[in-house]
Amino acid sequence: NAGVTQTPKFRILKIGQSMTLQCAQDMNHNYMYWYRQDPGMGLKLIYYSVGAGITDKGEVPNGYNVSRSTTEDFPLRLELAAPSQTSVYFCASSYPDRGPNTGELFFGEGSRLTVL
Amino acid sequence: QKEVEQDPGPLSVPEGAIVSLNCTYSNSAFQYFMWYRQYSRKGPELLMYTYSSGNKEDGRFTAQVDKSSKYISLFIRDSQPSDSATYLCAMSGNYGQNFVFGPGTRLSVLP
Image (cartoon, rainbow over all chains, first blue to last red; front, side):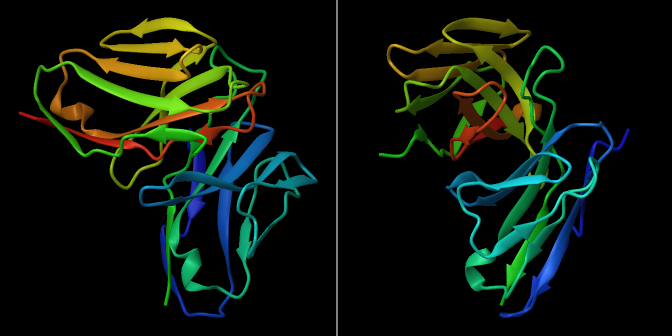
């Protein structure tokens, strides 16, 4: 059982370049999330999705875009990369009505992005 | 004032010590409280989950929630080197949604 898989694990971008971080889950979870984690700042929500075809902004959406065409996949697009987007990005999924720990987030291992 | 505050540490303790990790929060609507453990260069994983006030125990771990003081705690008994990680508190007012995370406390348990 793979859980939540993120690719790539590491990436260096130049200012102004664009890229897509991939996220896939095999747990049939309807909720999916993208967070960024900066030192001393905790996890900040970028975008989330409650199901295929439905996405919504989180706390820090500027400079990012998402799509959710299938239950399994939730890619995060960075347009015109800036140094402020240097961070560790985590994808997570959940199924709020399932299991004893409702709303438990299952995280991927993260994608480390540096923008120079 | 930040919505969730947590001492970032680092906190170093000897093996076998009792560890106390804490978070304070400002939003009285929070009802779901969680502790996640994050090993270096890994994603967070759920450690403890509590709804509303009270205590919950799971092996060496005890989570406490005091909603009147807006204060939550995680206690680790007989700490082990394998407990060395960053501990993130998280909380939500909505059923399984809209989690707010603390910045995390980095813990080192020394053999």
